[in-house]
Length: 142
Image (cartoon, rainbow, N blue to C red; front, side, top):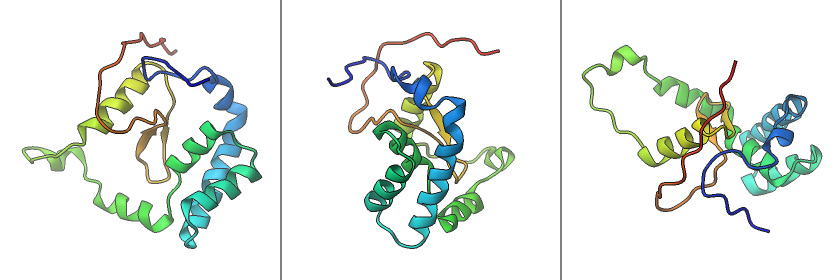
């Protein structure tokens, strides 16, 4: 049955899929996938191989694929990062679509990860045109 939620919060299985005891395997899978990508493997083949090795679900594979990247790409992104002081009075172009969806996921308690390139990503799987969704109160964290 397809997931018909009208918000970008957590998937019903996220608590179990991304529980602390699963994080070491997800991190190892991300490292392995990144290693394969560095050696020229196609993402689909490499993700299947890695996901099968760690017995990952489709949602866990999506998270791993969003967090993985070749080392050189992570270094290039790090070289382009600027301290906030360098942005004062500068023109800044922002991809609002991705910012909005990631913020919606985070504020509603969904899964947001930091990839190997230090970029925050969600696994909402939103493509195409933006549409507003039902607001969901986020649980307070201690």
